[in-house]
Each structure stands twice: as structure tokens, then as C-alpha cells.
Amino acid sequence: MKNLLLMAKLDIKESARSRWFFVYLLVFGGLMALFFITGITDSVVMGFTGLSRLLLVYMQVTIVILPIFILITTVKSISGDRESAILEYMLSFPVSLKDYYWGKMLGRFVIVFTPVFLALLMGVVYGVIKGGELPWKMLLVYSALLLSLCAVFLGIAFFISTLVKSHDVALGASFVVWITLLAFIDIALIGLMLQNRWDDNFIITLALLNPMEVFRVGAISLFDPELTVMGPVAYFLLDTFGHTLFLVYAVLYPIFLGAVFAFLGYYAFRKKDLL
Amino acid sequence: MIEVKDAVKRFLDTNVLDHVDLVIERGDKIALMGPNGAGKTTLVRSILGFYHLDSGKIEVEGYDPIKNRVKVLEKISFIPQTPPPIKLSLTELLEYVSKSTGTKEEDIKEEAKRMDLDISKNLAKPFFKLSGGMKQKLLIAIALAKRSDILIFDEPTANLDPKAREKFYHLLSELPQEVSTLFITHRIEEVEGLINRKIYMDLGKVVEDERL
Image (cartoon, rainbow over all chains, first blue to last red; front, top):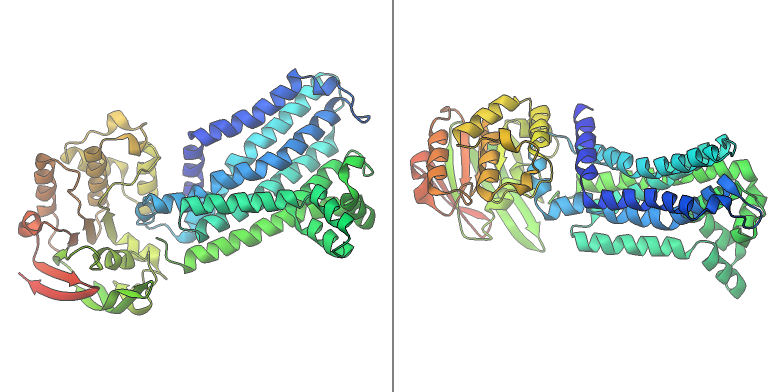
């Protein structure tokens, strides 16, 4: 446990100094600042104004960019260290593979979750200062959704990182995962439904298995479960499962999926050659 | 101390370690030689627990390097041929070594001084930004400060100037008699005075094992 926390601490310190983290901070902090400057809180679109509108836009953007950011910055964590012989040296010290792997993951989780959470808080504080009410429920649910989105993509990234020996292949695999999941959010699913080639139940299952779609539906459903931008699959999911049950699923399923991938990655890390 | 029994490691249908048998006793000072691809690095990496053998077994003081890697690595110090581009600052690297091995940071700084390396001015610097020679000296200082029973060096003087090499060999000559050392080297003449055993590998086999 002592070494696990040591690995986490060192990974946080190392990442906090890196260029990718600076860009990451800039993107999420900058996004929120951009929303303030462009007056999103003052605009009215589809009946939503103020803080709700700000958070809706933030979550919409997050769905697209957070997964790819986590994937491309994390897949190099172990595969990059392996390629540059850092892993060989660092693992020549008496640190268990369990402490090394989970410590790295814990450190990386803190480093990817903190900026998106702080940006969310920044938005809420700004909205409250502008005279809005503090949306407790929204803040809690969005924090939980962001946490679970970070967890699932970290799990996938560590899985790829341990399985693939080359950094370039790991990056390529990340893009494939991201594009595939992005393609199967509501927009593509509508296309499949319209073609009438696949059974509707199959399409609904696809939606339920896709952590990005689950996040999207969970996030948007806080505004209005009948919102037209949600798409027919999302509408069907909410109608079938009910709002609360779906929110619980939207938070727990990605965490579960991330844990499964993380454990598979750990298994491969232990059972395969380290170099 | 280290026992390699009928070890086989295969990469892409080639036996990189081909039924290797080897016993390293306490106090053995070994030069491990052989052409590129002979299996020297694979053997060392297997002893360090990086590779899973296809068959056979390796034991370090009775411990399996895969199943008991922490126990095994407590007894070994390793210096790679080329210092890796570690992004941790020197302070962080010393913290990692010190907390994972129980080595005092002061001891590492002391060993570094004996290698003519004053790290106090560079503590905030990332390791990879040091010069090649400084990096190698620090890795040597860490390995010596760890006070391990077995020291494994993979061409450790590749980045050192002649004066630093002399220093390094002098420090090694001061090691306690019971400490075992294993040098992977192509320049036997440099370590000749420090060794009592020569092992020659080729095509994954130990082809010569001579006690001096």
C-alpha cells in the first residue's frame, strides 16, 4: 500500500509537469472561460437559460473530447515507459506489480478527473454569482457522471497500454476505440433504425453498452427527458427504465466496465513478459 | 545464491535461452560475455523477473523472480547500459528509491560524491535533462547505496569518461567480498581485475564457464 501511494504521488507530480497536462488544463479551463465570455449563460436556446444551459453545453463538449484526451495521454503510460526502457529500470526495484500498476492508475485518475471537475465547479460558482440558484442535484449527478466517464476510459487505456508493446500501436488502438464509441451514439443509431435492417432491441442493447451514449443520455436527461436532441434511442431508454434507474445505471455501468478493463490489463501485466 | 535450471526462453520460435544451467555463488564476480543476440540480456532480464520462462526455473536465494519479485529485487541492484529518460526530478527519483528499498537518500548522495557527482544543485531537475555521464554516475551511486547482495551491470561504463571509469572500478574493488557482481561486457580487459569468473554465451547457451 505504501508503494502504491508512492507510485500514485510520483505519477501525479510527473504528469502535472508535462505538456499534455498543461494542454488538458487549458482545454477544460479555457472552455469554461470561453462559455463565460461568449455569454452562454445569458443566451436562451430551446427554453434553457443561465447555468443549466452552460452545464448542458459543457457536458456535450466533454462527451467528445474527454475520452480521447484520457485515451491518448494514458495509453503511453505503460507502453511508452516500456519502449523507452523506463519500465525496465523502475521495475528493477522491489515494487510489486500490483503497487506499480494500481498506483499509476490512481495517480492518473486524480490527474484526469481533477481538471474536469474543477471546470464544472467553476461553471457552477460563476452561475451562482450571476444570480442563479445552486443546482445541487445537477452538480452531484454531473460530478458522478464525469467520475464514471474518467473511470471507464482510464480502464480501457490501461488495458490497451499493457497489452500493446508499441506506443504507436497503442495510440492507433485508442483512436479506433474512440471513433467506434463516438459513432454509436444516438446519431448513428438513428441511421441504423431508419434502415430497418437490425432489430430494435439489438440497437437498444448497443446503446446501453456504449459508455459514451450512457453518459450522454444521463447528462441530458437532467434537463428534460423529452428533449428532442436526445434522439429516439435515448428517449426509449428513459421511457423504459425510468429516469432515476437510468441515472444509477449511467453512473455505475461505466465504473464497472472500467474496472473490468483495468483488471484485464492488470492480469496481462502480471502474466505477460514485462518488456 | 542464483540458480538457473534448464532455462528456456523463446521469442518467435527462436530459443533465446536454450536450456541454460548456471549457478552463481556468493562472492562470484562474473564477466558475462558473448556476441549480440547470445542471450545475455535475456538471461539477466529473466533473473530480474521481466520475462516468463517457457520452461526451466530460476531461483534467487530460493525465491522465484516472478512469484516473489519483491523478495528477489530486494537483493539485486541493476544498472542498465543506457540510462532511461526518466521524467522524475532527482528529488522524486531519490524518494522512489529510498521508499521502495529502504535506502537512505543521504547514502545515495554520499555514493554520488564518491563518483565526483554533486547532485545537490540539480535536485529539482528532471533526470533525463542531466548529461549522459551524470545520469550513469547517479545510477551507479543508487546501485551501490542500495547495499545489495548482487549487483548486475549491463555495460555500465559506456557513458563514462576514463577518469569516471577509474573511480567506478575503484569503488567496485571496495565492495565486500561476499557481494556478487555480474557484468555484461564486451571489454573484458576493463573488468579483468574485478572478476573471478568468466562466462561466455552464444546462441542462447552457456558455452564457456571459467573460474580464474
